[in-house]
Length: 418
Image (cartoon, rainbow, N blue to C red; front, side, top):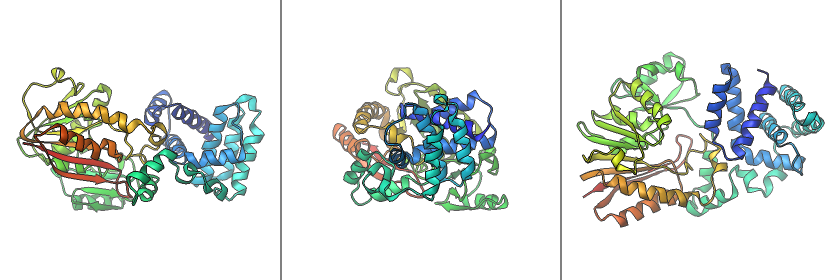
């Protein structure tokens, strides 16, 4: 497949995201529709994620050079894709421009071919750098986040908002969770070194690779010795601290990273549920690869009659739905898909779910409220409201993991039941 056709496909995906579609879902659909070489697929992923990561700056530059929107939206999207390549990648400039110009002939009868060529040549004349005028007053262009998001972070995290924004623009690291049933973090580092893969140790069982690679290149991955999981996400199972013989519920379990971690830490009776039966397949695949037993069930956690047998759990992992505002460097489309009111709306859904799950925790048991959000409405405020509703609930520990170069953003609060 030519680069031009990949650029067109990326432009199509860009428009779909702009219309409200999830980027991960779109890429899954596209991959199933065509045959892709590893290089072609890698290029499409880079273009799709990159245009979302730098959407604010790219759109501002586009409006600087083309003040009025074009009659063909896909041509503007193609310009965004090609500008991303010129401004933020090491792709050969002449190839990017030539392929994009050729691709533009398939749109609007090719009447914007000269315009596209002129804009891209101007990017090169600008030294493939954004002019200062683009970054002066435009918040979205400067930070590559919606203006409301920036203002919210300034209010919620007055000391750290700028660091959060900067960290959220970084490429996500590839972090591994070493299965302690098989080996240690230090021993696995040695295995990686034998394969020529540089890595560093985080804690005792987590390893961060210097350069991302396919799981096929990871020693003993398919034997369940190691799993891919963000360092911040690994804190969930460690905080819940499962003990041998305990009966544990993993609610909203898909895609199964935390499920597998719980099973690795202790011999437990684990029930994993999720409302999405398709995503539960990932949970089953993860559990099967680890070779550890778990009961997996598709069910709405709020409807106890559909899944709960009445036997209370020693511990519940309440990994509740959220805006996912903490994982935008891994899913950059999220920042453009969310709206200002979403955190408050999702908090209401969490409210119902947490109350139902609390009823399944035995006396003396515990529940971990977990989100991949950094918005207080879904986290600290949710916790306080929960404690006010339940006189038998006591906070044991609370942890806010803000995005940095090592992890995504997460929130955890471990709650004991009297």
